[in-house]
Length: 307
Image (cartoon, rainbow, N blue to C red):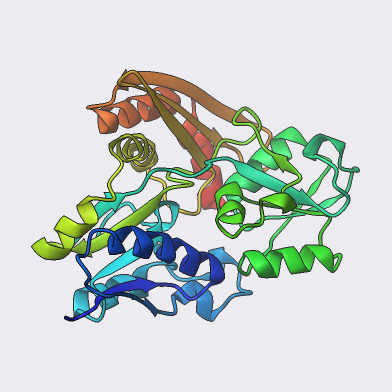
């Protein structure tokens, strides 16, 4: 029986996330072997280069998608937040798994939380979204670029290159490193990136057998929430490298979507919240984007493009 091949990046976190999918699929594969195949993404070939210096969108996923289209793998596992808004022709997001912890986390060398860090402390982050919100809360801290996988970033912190780092809490939890977290950052302090905490499984369109197996992993609530978040991002003309934040949650069939756009220097923020039925997540995201655009969100995004 031919194995079912899962494509993944080679980092410890990417492999861990792929193994989550592998374990789940083995429960439904009827004894068919399920194996992992590591593929090097553009962002992994230049682990120290700033993300802004890498070419185009999809620097974490393009090679995986190419392997999927070529038939080298049967499915690919991604952090949903890394997926561009437009899926290549011939591919589809076949499942979105139940979301892990969506918040960002602070890890500091001294064990101090964000508000207690000394003025002038160097805080490592590769995300303009995180840096913008950090500057808004603590303009006296220095947001410093950092690259590398989770292990590398924690090592750089321990070596004293930074006083603290900002990371997605879900990655630390999945790697068994939750004890390293100094502080979970409340949504009021730092709103996440659209899709943060969710895993997406991408397959070839028309591959009915794989699509059927993968469908068992689908979580409808997470799908609806992340579709609202990504629709908000799309309507504002954003991608993976802009200071746009969004988070949706569901209660009794209703979605509540929070969204924000923050000036790169943290001086100005446009933020809002809107509710709508779970059955219409894209309409909700588009509506909130329209409301924030009327308050100047697009003007703030223009500042990013001009710098």
